[in-house]
Image (tube, rainbow over the protein chains, first blue to last red):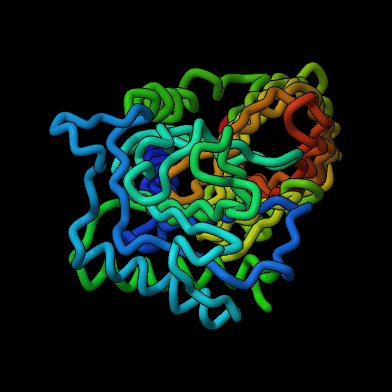
Length: 214
Length: 196
């Protein structure tokens, strides 16, 4: 009888430990990541003007697919895209940058895209931007900094690449990316929830990139 | 879950298998305190742990045996920015470390000192460490088999009914491996010892 009691104690102890195994995130926003990287040799203090398109490009693969032949990529629905662009523009303005037209000699170009995918296509086809800027042959990240490469869960990402417009001309060889930002998380939740997460994520990206501030 | 059933079966049967004359089987609940690099990773005390031991008495006051167990260290690290060179990343982290010692043990017991018999012990073997960091949707994980030395202090509380109380403090000193620094911790254990 006594032995059986001890055995039950042992079982309860083991099952108690197992059932107490810690759990992870409960909320979608707890899975959000904000990633930024930059070219330490770029003179951010000397750049004040930026240009940004009015639409957010939807990346559907590393190679640009243009089945209708209009040389334009897919765009995010304006309702969602505008939230992202407004968050970026607000933070750029608050950081002392001035928005200008793409033909008004901007110092940098802000290329905003989104994707729902298992991979981040850092080296996606530059043709995605041909409609706006004329395109270039590819991307390059100056010495000693590389974009994050991740693969795994099917997730939603908002990606922004800041390109040095003073060295990157339409038709030039490669676009020099001097800053990039990725908001990554589960593409779940209602519009309001996503909007809040995007605004918070963009604000965090600027907060952790103090060199953008003038 | 499949791994849990053999464990439960072992726990269930072990006292009857081992609680024979000249040997003992111990099962304890563990509270563990991370030290060194493990403390740098998770500062929180672990209340999720247990240990099992089998001892064979070559002398009434000297036993040799084996020990294993399982301790889970866990900490949620609130939203924080991590910077490496020019890159920064912000998010909530969930950090887990599972530590499983597998040791050959020796114990010197001060017998004849009444119902409470103090002892000192030493264990040598390996500490299997499985570390995982959940960061956003991604998991960064590594594991290692680390050489481990484990001194111990404790007391056996005899009841005279073939089962005794067991209280001990153990320090698991683990050595560095190529992919992971040593993950030491201190554990306080309380449980039962069958066969005494």
